[in-house]
Amino acid sequence: MEDIAKFCIDFLEKNNCEYAEVRIEERDSNGFILKNGIPELSGFDFIKGMGVRFLLNKTLGFVSLNDFSKENIKENLKRAIKITKNSSKFNNNVSLSNENSCFKNYKVMQKIKLNDITAEEKLKLLKNAYENIKGKNLFGAFFSLSDEVCKKIYVNNQGSKIVSEIPRVNFVYYITVKNGNETSQRYWQYGATGGWEKVKEWNLANLMSNEVKALLNNLRNGVRLGKEKFDFVVGPEVTGIMVHESCGHPCEADRILGRESAQAGESFINKNMINEKIGSDVVNIVDEPGIEGSYGYFLYDDEGVEDRRKYLYKNGKINDFLHNRETAKDMNVKSNGSARASNYDKEAIVRMSNTFLLKGNYNENELIKDVKRGIYMKNFMEWNIDDKRWQQKYTGSECYLIENGEVTKPVKNPVIEITTPMLWKSVDAVADNFELHAGTCGKGESMQAIPVTFGGPSMRLRGIKLG
Image 1 (cartoon, rainbow, N blue to C red):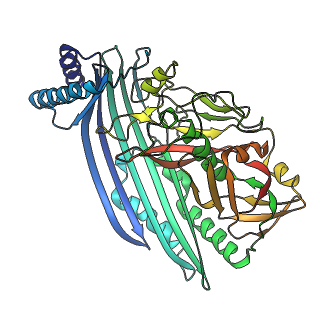
Image 2: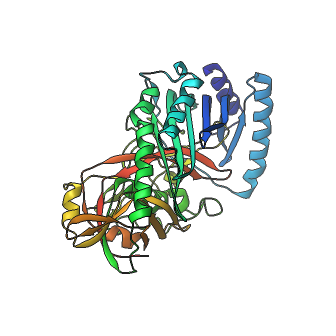
Image 3: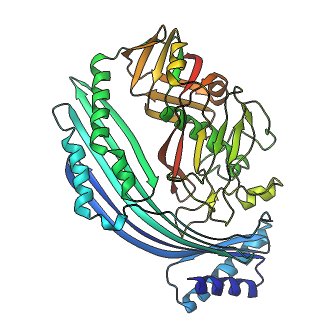
């Protein structure tokens, strides 16, 4: 594969390209879907191909292919060069930031190799989880279990060569329970980098059982509250989705520059808002790819830039944006390793990795004890947010009333409707019970779904009017 990559680089340089990079990927994956205890779908895929990007006449060109014969490569590159030259007549004026060349070979180890686990064993795990919850109150259950090993080589004409191998596992579930004429649904996702040992750690049968119990308790015993003001203590899952949606996305530099307007949306942030106050002093949110075991893990992005921790909100102020090499050049900074592609046939764009609120100095019980009348929102049922990541809504799932510092009865689906500044300025205390949760983040056109994690500890929000 190195010879193929070098062939592409040499050909592009001979055709006067100012910059050239090749990303070759090999993905071996399989997945299983169980619906109401019945195996519904399975897939076994092996995908191999490469994406080639280059800069010619200040215009970016991109081509992908999975036929590695040199004649085919040459013909595709010629065609891409011709198209890019024609496009350059429109004065695109693209340039990329100067970055250090990197030479690295890294691999995520598997204690229990994914390829050593049979399809029968994987289906058995899902069936056991279903058997643990089936009964008259279960209205429906959808389980999806998948795994993948991605091998990748990245080479550019500035001296970088990065070889990686990253295995990932992923479990998604939808559970619907019924009590009388009422139903309630819970959706969530678990994901990690590593081998089958990660799946075993999740203890899916016990996890599903606890989810059903919580949903039924809420349906049977939950109370509905009026539209008054409450203090909220939200758990790590809720903190995580808030971080992802109202900090991570609006800090993507391509959104800020208006380049995602017709696809993923825009941002309320503009490039002059660095150091502007967005939250309270205890709000510190970072994006950090290199966390071992995390679903969004990597050490070098898909432009060959080394990962690092980025402080997006620091002490309540907007501090940094997520950049690829193009947006970094536009804003006169260095790239911070935030370019990712979902597959070989997609161009890398600005993406999150592991985005989370840093932990504080309290435990969760201390946050609750200092609330006279409030709501403990352990997790959520649904969320939505507008295209500029300003106005948002979070509907709770497993939630409880807080009365005089004590968690009491369940609360049915309380809703937080709030703007981003109001949300983060209302945070007065952050706990130390840090958690990361997996997600699949969508962006781009055509849609690029990539693995990420989001999270943090529990946090307390003061004076939120119930939606």
